[in-house]
Length: 316
Image (tube, helix red, strand yellow):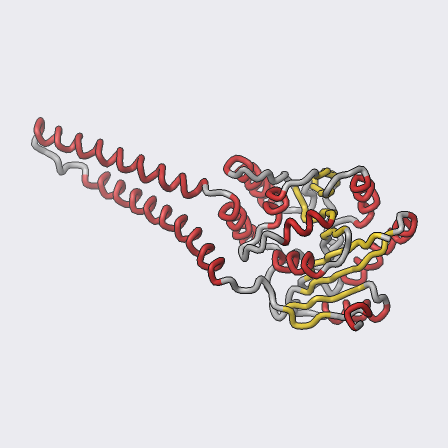
């Protein structure tokens, strides 16, 4: 018997906890045929509602349901890492509690694992139901990342991914504090099969990802998996030094020929403002990398657990 660990990060998903469980259990017949046991590991990321209480109810009804509850909200990346650390399965799959990751795809995903793939990942081919501006910037982000980074990130990639134990252990070996899971998946490599599906809207509730949060998350990815911004800052510095040198030469020539080196002060003010802005922009890039380095060297824990349900094996 193989054990499948289903990792479900949750933040204020009280309405969806049981719905997800019911939908997932529709695969029970397939699991019996393939002789697969499963555990459902809900990772409560410091929810403000009754998410943890709902999971506890499920745990009392079905011992295969487990809960790991954080002391506060640490973010989805921490929840994913905690789930991978706590899971016991020969296989592990990441799924969202809002049912945007269809459990009905699992049988097909498992078939590819049987064929020898190390992981089976999913990507959305449409973004139906999303605001147009969010979809546009999401596509631009994937294009940008694939140009400035050596780590491939597939457009529309979801965290919904079935992995072997070897892949799970490889991801856990990357214990960095500033985590960008989509990039980590690409960085560790392994043979991956991609499945495409139409976008599925949330069953209940509202998304926790605002445009601003997605923007900050994209910056995490760029800084974590590319040094191109630092190169851009360096190139801009060299270019402006060359431009400044050229302007000095022009000023000297104008003084020698026309005796009027000080005319055009409005344009000079504009140039100073532009150069100052570029300098602050470059300092901001350096500051972002320095801040991430600062957080890494502090070696704070990625998450803290407030409570965790115990299984019979744990009690023994």
